[in-house]
Length: 289
Figure 1 (cartoon, helix red, strand yellow):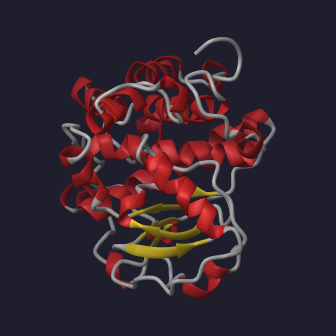
Figure 2: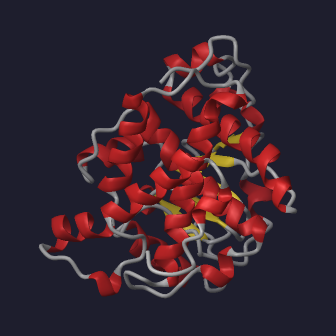
Figure 3: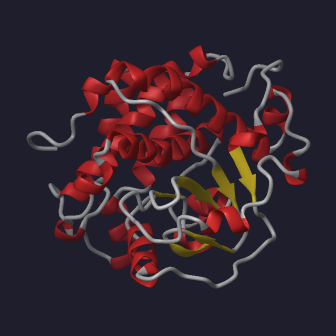
């Protein structure tokens, strides 16, 4: 996967907190939310249903978007050369797609920043650490990621990695933002188990990631995707399946505690979104999954 050399990167969609640390502030109920996030990380990507009461905290802690830490990220050539610029490019592409696509459903798309952090940071969903993994926080409507997670995806979860594996991860988290704007995130979250609401929510976010992949080239940031690119995304989706993670970490598989879905389910729903390219292909809340 490569970005178009002449694509213009918009760093205002990313806030760079790397090296800032955390104040240690947690909103009322935040500790419970953080526990939820950590629990979800043991089962896969993201904490899409987490919520909290520090909605204004980001205004106090957020440095200028696209600050000096991202000054080198200007073009698609930079995205091809530097990992942080590549993530900026993915964020730009993902949001460019949803800005065009979501209004067709009667909903307005509002951009959400991705926050880069190192080790720990404060969020409206409580204090997060690098062990939390990437997640979307509906309390402040931001996506959070320690870029070190991409190495962890390979060393801890056994994925082969690659640039488009990173794109899948970001697109999954922005899938939660789309659910939030649709008004379905809160009502669909919770309820563990292989057929539970939490799994259905996460699989829909995988499907939304697949839709973006289908249309990614149309956003004018990316070159046409290759079979190898899609393979990287599918491999990452499989690596964070509940069954694979439980088998590796617990020595057994326990479907009654699943929160994100099996490897096969995650691959299936990303593939559905990618092949069909429409939101109608992502109804994970009806019937069996």
